[in-house]
Length: 242
Image (cartoon, rainbow, N blue to C red; front, side):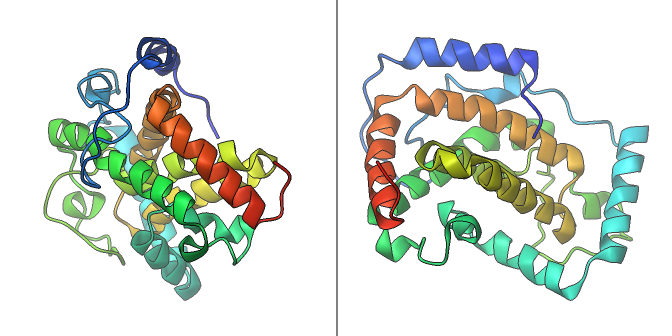
């Protein structure tokens, strides 16, 4: 997995130092800000512009999507559709085992829901600002196999951002599985390309945004409290030492 750009690294450090003393805010709905303050972490101010639609980069990205489309198997399509439907920390049961499930881990499930709920808070302003057309909107010869939209909101990928945020969270809880967790997050993000609904640069942008957003989350007392509870619950359930 690539490292965040220099500007994003500096942004993470600034956030962690500036918010560490903030008190948690009142509980809000799942799609409202919970751990993060969108006024503080407006990533649209520092995220690079998406490639121009008439650029060589986009031509290469579309060629890659066509290649993926031609090569995708029914099994890959099934996996991509399943990942589209599940946006929580339990996508990583492929790493931690089949008993890593929400009904057995209520504190972990609650943390996951709050992390996922902050994804649109972080991404919606960028999607609205950049208004990048989805690949299939720009190239009608592509055949997406997942849900489509008429909105030009491709950049960054919300699913990928959510997946990386959940991965970074779980890596804090089960650090001995960090490599496998991050590999699964990359696979989860890649499935947006298998779906045919995002460009590779949408995925890369989501990963970079996730570094900054997660750095922000780590600096909030509310996140640290929920993370500690979920970590203890998960490690006990999986039979791992605390």
